[in-house]
Structures are given as C-alpha cells and as structure tokens.
Image 1 (cartoon, rainbow, N blue to C red):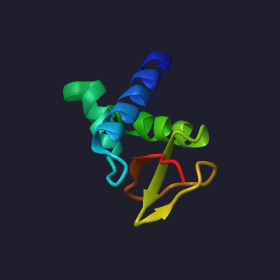
Image 2: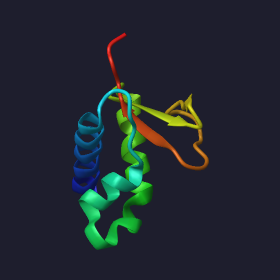
Image 3: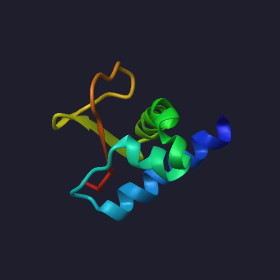
Image 4: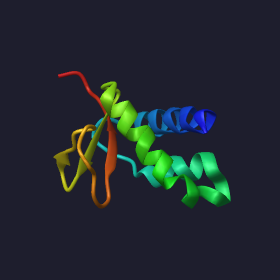
Length: 86
C-alpha cells in the first residue's frame, strides 16, 4: 500500500497544481487518477494522503471554506488546494 500512498500523494500534488492556487480538488479526483475503475476503494487512502501532505505543509485541506487541521478528525466532504506563498 505504500506505493499506492506515494502515487496518491503525487496525483494530489499534480492535480492541485494544475487546478491552480484559487481552486481545489476533491480526493476522489486523485483516487480516480490512481485507481481507475476501482477508485472507490482508494477514497480512504486518498484522504490519508491528503492528511499527510497537509502535515508536511504541501497542501491545505478545507471543508465548507474552513481550513482543517491534519491532526483532527475530518467529517464530510473535503477539498484540497495548493499552498501558496503568503
């Protein structure tokens, strides 16, 4: 699963960068990119990959416009965006 985790992280970073600094992606987009027809099985791992990237400061994860902490429980839909310089 470690290889899948790395592939999901790369997909998240690439998709978010492609989308640009003012837009976000859904974890399902990375799951689809990596998992093809079996993407639904990768939803949990995609959220885990987003959490790990957020811990490292590579992405920001939001829900309803609020930034989520990678250390707290996430409920409901989340969006992933690139971190921009401030």
